[in-house]
Image 1 (tube, rainbow, N blue to C red):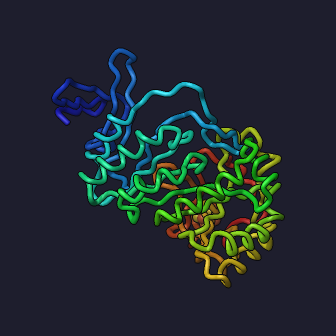
Image 2 (tube, helix red, strand yellow):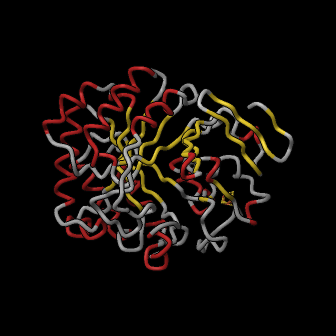
Image 3 (spheres, protein in one colour):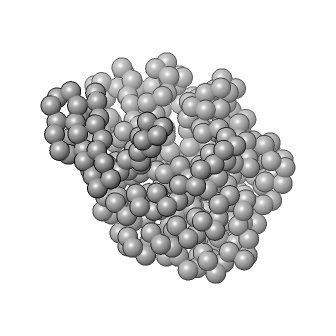
Amino acid sequence: METADGESALFTGATGSLRLLGIDPSEVDGDVVFVVPLRKTAHRLIRANSRHNTLLITERCDQLCVMCSQPPKKQHVDMFPFFAMAVLLAPENSTIGLSGGEPTLFKSELFEFLRKTMEQRGDIDFHILTNAQHFDRDDLAKLRDLDLNRILWGIPVYSSDSTFHDHVVGKPGAFDQVRNNLSVLCEAGAKIELRTVLMQPNAPGLLDLARFVTVALPFIDKWAIMQLENIGYGRKNWYSLFFDSSLGFDLVSKAVDFSVSRGINIKLYNFPLCTVPAEYRAFAPSTISDWKRAYVEDCVDCSLRNECGGFFEWHPKVHGYGRFGVA
Ligand code: SF4
């Protein structure tokens, strides 16, 4: 930063200057910003004060999930060269999330990007969200070329019923494909985080899904059951999808108990802690990044606040949980 006068801050780099208005300059000092002067746009790619940054690889996707938080778009701009530079400038020992859309629609570019950045930044890990529709056995060599201990592949499976899963993701045959490709990733030695967004339609089948996971996918690193985000299609379909797990926790607890009894590492993501019975709170880490996290009025005096991940800032203030707050 060159100058700051309380109203604006001037940043100067090798290729030009950037003046920021209406923001505390200390909040952005050291950030990696992608500026397009002709369009007069600036995108913050990396927050210097966060160990968890996410890069949106593409907005294209071959699925159309009923709860998608980032509904797909047709256009795609290849940002890999800029993202590679951003990763090199990221804070030490951080995790970079790669999301979409579907990042593996650009699989060769993705592999190359990972190979280069991982080579140059041995302290950085990746968390890649993918529908795992586009791997095949020909990818084994390229996968094994990467340090797979430093990549966690987040892969959604919504049901043990293939027809139901295909319906949720809007793609016939998706379940069979993801199942095959989970095997490919397993064979390569990849670390897998299975992800299941909890919704009214799939909550009753959670125990069946737990049985499926323990029998068919015992090699996964962890299974995350996730509360719904109120954004994108999740917001559009909120009333038909949001499952009040504070009142219907028995469906979740049965899946948790079964998984634990079979040695599956199960987690509950995005669950406000007070909506989870005390004996299950150890499964519910704080998972919402600090800059996306918000609390509601009732949280002010909560004794669990330090451990609780709260809500996404876009969650409605009328939060929808029938049982809420610490008694
Ligand atoms: S009252 Fe708020 S801070 Fe406390 S556990 Fe519930 S959501 Fe978290």
